[in-house]
Image (cartoon, rainbow, N blue to C red; front, side, top):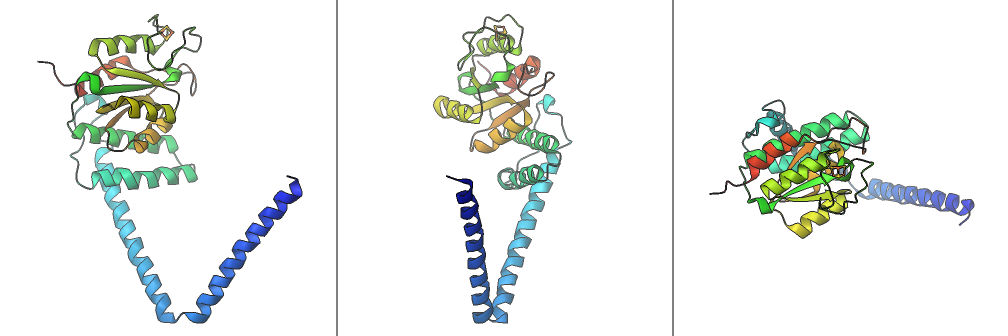
Length: 255
Ligand code: SF4
């Protein structure tokens, strides 16, 4: 298609939309009374007040979590209320969207979300048998010069300990949990669908963790942010000690 066609299509579309808007405005001006407009604005005002209250409730709920216990203490940071899932489902996506659009402190906002989510997951007090706990790891944890090709699990890892995966493989074997490597959101979702865990511990950057937590509905996901001393997506690290503490917290005690 020539450039002229693109130009023509876009121009015609914009003018078409403007024409429809103009027609609707003219019809509204001619046929509707002042009372009608007053009623419309009244309804809009009520909806805006409800939305504002909703955001306020979400803000209070999330604020109660941030700044309290450090996640590394593995104690519930706040007791969940009926509104808590609503705050996570609606308030935080609005906030994350706004921080994306205005490019305002995206990483910090995502970190608050991840921490609040972790506190909420801890407050649920849920424990699962090890075989129902799935650890999802990002591919960038693998040493970039490692010659072994990891597909989904860590079977190929020779535990040379040049990267965090060697230690994680050992932890997975020791605690009997499932581990999968994800190349992104799609493969992480597929792993959750296929393996049907009761709880997920996910390691990733702030962006992937916050979007992953939002994607997975009805399944507790505890997030651990990876360290990126070599920049994003390359030879990242995770504190295996912290990971083990989290695993111990969520796994049911064996009798
Ligand atoms: S620990 Fe495993 S994945 Fe990491 S470099 Fe060694 S063999 Fe490769």
